[in-house]
Each structure stands twice: as C-alpha cells, then as structure tokens.
View: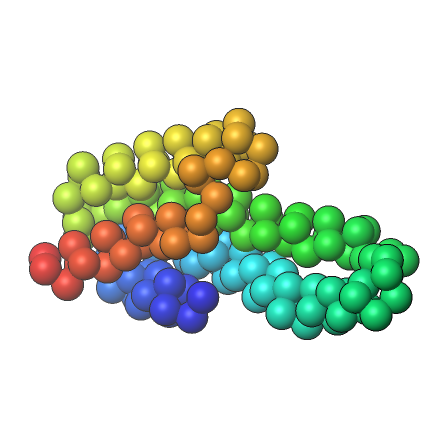
Length: 149
C-alpha cells in the first residue's frame, strides 16, 4: 500500500497534460483513501481477531460485540477494493488523455476497473475479484509501461 500510491504520485508529476494530471491525482487520492481502510482492516484482523479467538477458547463463546466489529473491518476491506477498482478507471482515463502512454493501456484501465468493480459487487465480495493483489495489477502494468516507454 505504499508502492502503488507512490507510483501514482510519480506518474502525476510526469504527465504533461493538465487533465491527465488531475485524473492521475484523483486516482492517487482514491488509492490512498482505500489503502488507509485496508490497513485498518488488516490491523483489526491481526489484533482483535486474535484476541477474540483467545477469549472464545477461554470463555467458550465469542466475545460480545465482536461480530459487529468484524463486519466493520470487512466493510473497510470492501471500501478498499472498490476504491482501488474505481481508481483504475480514473487512471485509465488519465492515460487516455495523456500522450505519455499508449491509448490501449488507458482503455484496459477503464474496462478493467469497470469489470472488476462490477464483478466484485456481483459476487458479493467473496468471488474471484476479491484477492487484494488484483487491485494493483493495472497500476503495476502502467508502471512497467512507463519504465519501458
């Protein structure tokens, strides 16, 4: 969650077209906001879930209130994934209005983001669109294209 926003911020600086810079900055902001949600969700899972498991073993029942907090942490993860997929759409638009990268790469971002956001929603957050690495594949491909270009 550090490399993707840093790369997007770097891309924003490299782009010359004002519209592309604004779109890239918006994609960066979306990734950062979603990243904060994911980090909070991970912290919950690494601390509170462990605590609840220990308490469940000791007391014989799940601690009161845990289910609600677990749903909250799950919602943070959902926010992360959706903002990442939306950021891919916006980044794809930035590539489309920029001359720095091929147009086809912009269309891949737009179509990728739309398809994966809709797929994530359609599978109720538990299907093939759920693994978090998928949220970084398009940005990684843009980074590679920028380095090669």
